[in-house]
Length: 187
Image 1 (cartoon, rainbow, N blue to C red):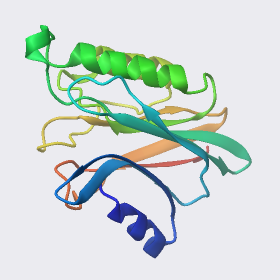
Image 2: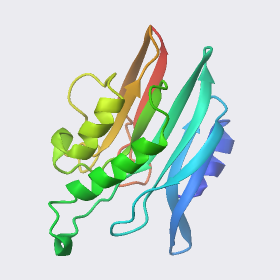
Image 3: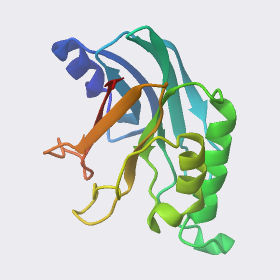
Image 4: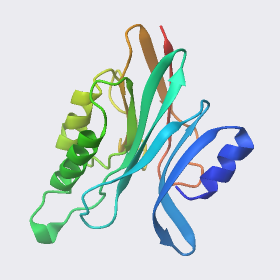
């Protein structure tokens, strides 16, 4: 995601938080959260460096009288074969552990992003996240990369009486991944 996301958010009347991770060919890349509600206490979270710099971001928003955590992460995407790792699963596990240690436990919210879980939902990074954000989504994850791999996820820790729906966006919007969109509210 590049810094143009801030201009898009402004044009659509959304609030946004963007944290750059690196620049390439004059474009800043990083993580962003866009929301229909104001975002407060936004912060960038540096993850353990594996092959390249990776980050997560978190913020809070108030929805229908509830304060919700919103976190977005982009985990390592490749294997460090020279370190003897399986296809990145140990690297992503270290990064997810570091992220979860930085997020407040038990606070209702959403954890999403590109988990790069090439080995599926049995990967330790996904399992760790799903233990902390156990409220969905129902059913198997949707393919978000190459029309066959579910690498991008939204996981929820919902307040009592709330539900969450999600779907894959119909377009990649210039990315190599399809975005996943969530709607939360009282049941």
